[in-house]
Image 1 (cartoon, helix red, strand yellow):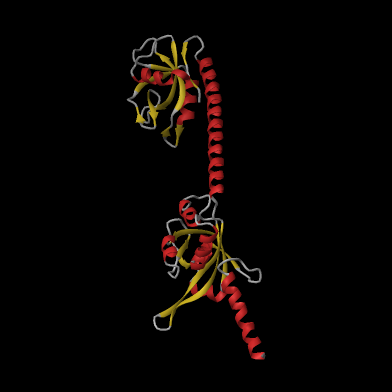
Image 2 (cartoon, rainbow, N blue to C red):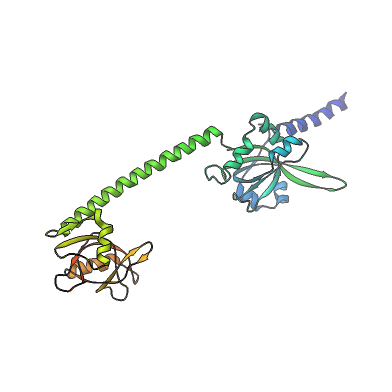
Length: 302
């Protein structure tokens, strides 16, 4: 009787651990918490020496086996890979047979959800994986110790993915509206400043900026008119007398320019020069009343 009780005392904890480890997190087991990057940095034998169970936080799940194979053949091995990036860089395979079977019973969409958010930074990289080490193989073919998953925290539900997508869409829309409002306000302020600089001239403001640029480059500015010009950039080798229109696609042909006075010239040079290069600024210009095809800069807007 005494031997039987002793045997049961030894077997029951192992049975409980084996069942619970793949289904729930038993409260009586102490898990060594470790960050995903630290877990992947350490040699496996060193990890096993330190603890037989781990709670790995902030880790990626980069690969999972085809769940259909496990459904068709429940005795087959089902592996997943935990890694430091979605593409599996510095990853470790872990066995997940019992975990996968349990999840298939609870929610058959779990594997599909994991795969669908593989490259989603909102979820992947933030998983918490609970595992223990187990020796697999046999005496004839050899054995190895491998991590076995018994729980994963952080896999989003379909409802959470939908709610997060909606919240993200709403946040983007709100940001876009805020950006558009801020831009409209800045444009209005700049246009008012340009109009003040152009006092006494027929003003072609920000709403005509695209057409103004065409006229500027083509030498078609009218005398007595003032134009709002974006992308005005002093030429590097003749900044005082030549300028171009700079855009994301390149720069225009050079245009001869002069300045209303030395203050305007200094303002433009100070605002546009940076470490020997010249950056685009916004200015108000008019046609020279004496020299043809020459532009006069009346003032700088920004």
